[in-house]
Length: 121
Image 1 (spheres, helix red, strand yellow):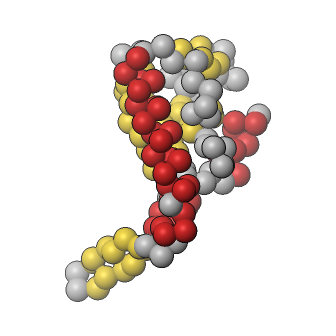
Image 2 (cartoon, rainbow, N blue to C red):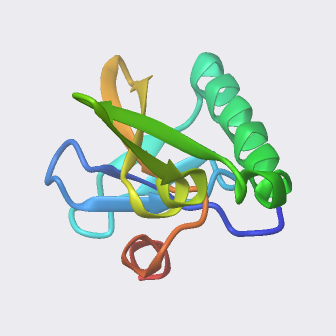
């Protein structure tokens, strides 16, 4: 991938954030409590692979997306939010099921330092 994609979810045992890359999806350990997470569910793997494709397409479409915006109407006023701002500054969540429980995976198309530090450390 052109950019290292970072995802993050909260540990079910201790709520510590667990950062990971969609390129490494076999297993994870929580650095705080040692809880292990296995990515052995075929449906979860399919969803993560599809999400990886979506991230790649967003990165490849960066040039055209820089000209795009999303309109939000509030009453009679309309506010245009640049699409790149939505991808890089707002929290977005992918809700998936892992080990029989729903988890929210936080993602950004171009992660900023607050997520990246969790992956590195």
